[in-house]
View 1 (cartoon, rainbow, N blue to C red):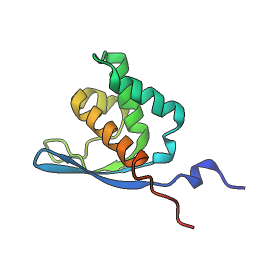
View 2: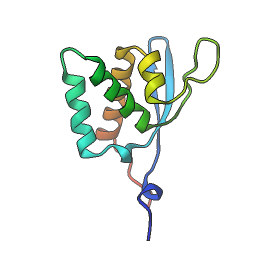
View 3: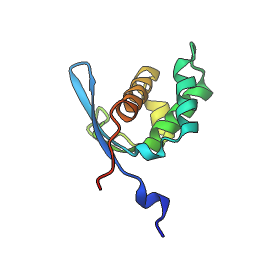
View 4: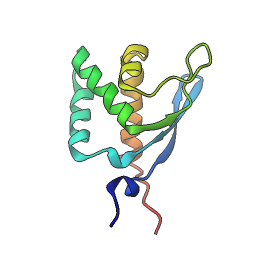
Length: 113
């Protein structure tokens, strides 16, 4: 009998930002229908309040397995709801979630047989 966590795959993505890019690894199988609906509602909101932004940060942290984002001092930027909430602008969090959603729903990667 398999555990759910052993069936979840990871996907590598490269997201362009200005003159650079951010390489991330996400676990798209943690992207449930309920989470997709919640994320779409949060991204469509005309104004993002702190509770919605905190939700978006937690959701992003749940999806991310790893990334190559660094702080200005060269240390790795921690993947956690709190560090994303306190250290990243709303626009970057929203773009990451949008790009992850596009990558998962437009070009879903099928498990190997």
